[in-house]
Image (tube, rainbow, N blue to C red; front, side):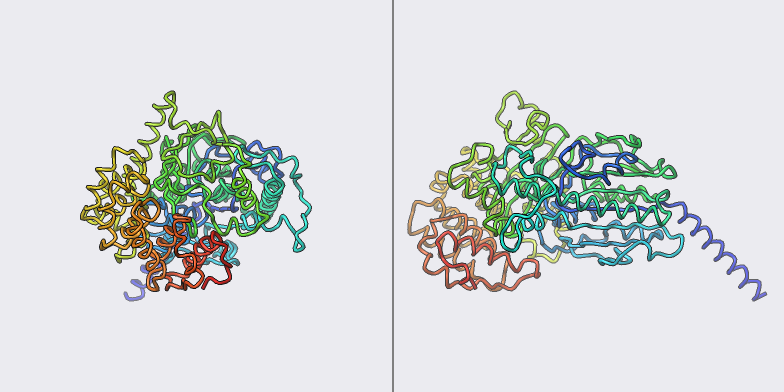
Amino acid sequence: MKSLVIFLISTMFLNAQHQHNKKLLSKPNILWLVAEDHGPHMGAYGDTFATTPNIDKFAEKGMCFNYAWSSAPVCAPARTTLWSGISGPSSGGEHMRSMSPYPMEKNMFPKYLRDIGYYCSGNGKEDYNLSTPKGVWDESSNRAHYNKRKPGQPFFAYFNNTQSHEGHIHDITRTAKNKRKPSLHDPAKVKLPKYHPDCEAMRLEWAAYYNSITVVDSVAGKRLAELAEAGLEDNTIVFYFADHGGGLARNKRWPNNAGLQVPVVVYFPEKWKHLAPKEYKAGGRSDRLISFVDFAPTMLSIAGIAPPKWMQGHAFAGDYQTEEQPFVYGFRGRMDERLDLVRSVSNGRYVYLRNYMPQFSQGQWLDTQIRMSFSSTAVWKKLYDQGKLNKAQSLFWETPKAPEELYDLKNDPDEVNNLANSKKHEAILKTMRKAQQDYALDIRDVGFIPENERFNSNMAPYDFGHDEKLYPFERIFSTAEIASFMNPDDVCELQKRMTDENNIVRYWATMGMMIHGKDAVSKSEKALKKALSDTSDDVKIAAAWALVKHGNNSKTSEIALTLLSELAQRKDNILIVIAALTALDDCGMETASLKDEFANWSITPVALNKRYTNYPGRLMKSILLRYGIPVKKVK
């Protein structure tokens, strides 16, 4: 009897294992080939200057998405959105090289693939702006490969190529002796966008950019050949795409179409065409709007998993693919050491940008872009300072930014003619504005929380943002709206909100005074002076910033400047140091009374995470350069 029971149990186990294995064999392999820092500058997308034979050939048997957005115009925030299925402004992952806790009871999509038996390998950067949850990968390293899976096991494999990264574009245009390197693409034949000045440095880097795309195209070709040689081509769905727009300034890091549009080429073999987007056709093109937040639910859908409702994207392939969406959304938060808050939306024809920190130019002094005197960005800035640029070329450096920007990609593909004040385009402006506002409310955008405030709670920003008591979003959002629209009639309302019980509301109301400028600061001097003693350091910084930059009372401005000086040298909070240094840097020559002190400052706060470590020094460098102080003296 005992033997019979053991036999029956063993049989049941073997049958269950057989059914499980049979089910796994009915799952497709999924391969991602990802390149960094390049837009749709490929032959498959109609760019005849590009040299991309491998992806062009791949596109002939697959399908190109005509209009795909990355979500963020820089790698880590884009990557965080890609793997999580949660928009960066909702998860708290929108700031470049931040590190926020992962939302509770959620995970990155490879974990859910692993749960049903997939082997998941990640060969390339993790570099997320959220802490990595458990169980995402079977292996994540530069040696990870799908060939390490068990026999017959379906795989999801990710290969990330860095050879088109901006570092290569900036650095490879010259040799060690500062001589021009030979180029596959003739710099003289580059078609420059209207916003870039026609100069040698810009042409050299555009040519180097095209060269780098040829390199990653070659690597992708080798990966595709490897797949075919392994006999896996007919059972593998393949995606080729880039992580955001090109590596030159006003492409990378700026959330317009140039910064967000990426090539996405997909291939569904005959066996798996029933999982393809409904419009899929070999050699075809899709006008469906997709963005990185859609990729996680799409991968689950392809694997037969219903995407969880908390994922904020929409599956565009697989068993659970949805209808086409009317908009795609983008964002910009802190870019390395430089604060900003921009949101964007597109319907494929028009692009709308909402600038919540208009005091900053598009082209803030970012050390990684401008560190070399011969880089295109440094030369561009020099030409601007010399007054040698036209209106389209100057836009990148000017302040304040317009609160709203609207561009017609059909008639203005370079996005230089802002239609936000055009009566003819008033209806589309309202449509796009409402889409952006509705999306912010829908995802509970936590980008309006000062970065320091996020660490005053043990909660993940996503969880904090979804708690209405802790994060009264509509009140905070409406304050940020009136703060940044710069309407003089809103000053009285901002004064009222400076006394709100919520720290974040007070922060935006106070910041609004600084954004509105001298008249607003003059009318609100008493309230701003009181705010210098607020319980929130972020409110203090905003008040001091306003009084130093726009104040008329020299004594009050001096008190405010002293406060910023003290906060900038804090040892216990690097995010407060970054915010205070940002204010001091933006105040420009109004900080001249500290000139003799700057060289002796010790900017060495304890970092919450090593990813923040270099930012205070970079901001201090910008201040020192303004006054001609040797940068080597910064501590």
